[in-house]
Amino acid sequence: MTVSIYEAKTNLSKLIAQVERTGGEVVIRRHNVPVAKLVPYRSSSEPRTLGGWGRV
Image (cartoon, rainbow, N blue to C red; front, side):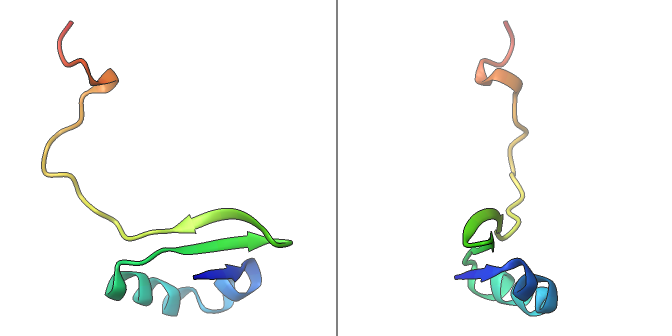
């Protein structure tokens, strides 16, 4: 789904509920240019290591 900044501001609670319920994403546009994405939060069960190499 894609919405304008005005629509996102006006309907933020509804958009958050929709993303939470469906797991989908909402792209937010300014003057028809995508500037942000509202996505569901997914917590990681494993801690991340910087650089992906672990201990060096």
